Image (tube, rainbow, N blue to C red; front, side):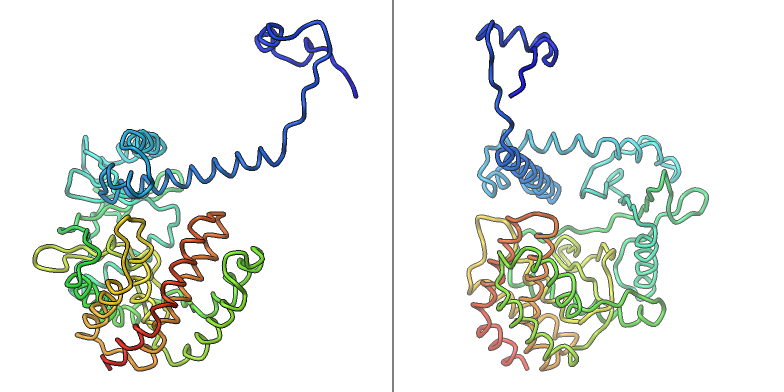
Length: 393
């Protein structure tokens, strides 16, 4: 073992501290334990992810008490986390304040409503994009839907007549703020029926959009057999068994060619559908819109209800009633085929496997396990869902 003089390697202030406890002899300093360091790093990453999700709940309008109940933290702790997370977005807020005059807005009051979106003077919403192509696609969809009298936000042009503004490879799109708000009672069967109806309205309008613009063609089946399988394989099937995965994919494949495909929203949840006392008041966020199987939107919404982190989670009967209400609302406008109805449980399970794979890829084990639990919840409801779809046919 090689000995070195502490004067040569330690800062003076640290050496003085050590000399209070030991001096004049040899002192062995053990190497850092790799496993302990890794555990500390993993724990830090988990805390960062947890704090990010806490901030998202805050932006959604949850109170500190509600968030505290979900994450088992005190209200003061939640408040400290929110303040710290806000600091991360201060730089972008400053940039937005500087470019607001491009729209003729001086001294605009900004309120963050999403990590990438701010409300301006309670009248407008400005959204930040890193992907110009994605933003331009969103603009095109919104314009076409407006022509179809579908309630979406109108774009606010800059003073020079531009649809958006750019700043150092970041793009800013401003639109009028839509009336209404997000649904807060996710167990309300009446609102579930309205959501089903609203999804069908959007799908009907989307059929016209497809004729006017090319969209990204995507396939849930190809995703399942591609990057999803690769992610699960790399994880050595630790969260979901290979047999469970293969059985789901095999069933999905038996249905897939018979399922209608069209342009879909792809991110259907209460946060992207606004309601007023008179009903649906607007749709927002078409960033993920793509051509895929039509029932993906319905299934995505229904599985999303189960993913809510809350101390008032759905019981089996409550969720089944919501499934019934959503399908009923949808079929007030568009009839689902028998193949679609039979495929609903399998598509919902496939979506949860997709989430398992995604969360594994971003090293978020907790949410991967949560998705697996939702997968099993749906498995236990298969017969009940099948009875609903058959009775509605």
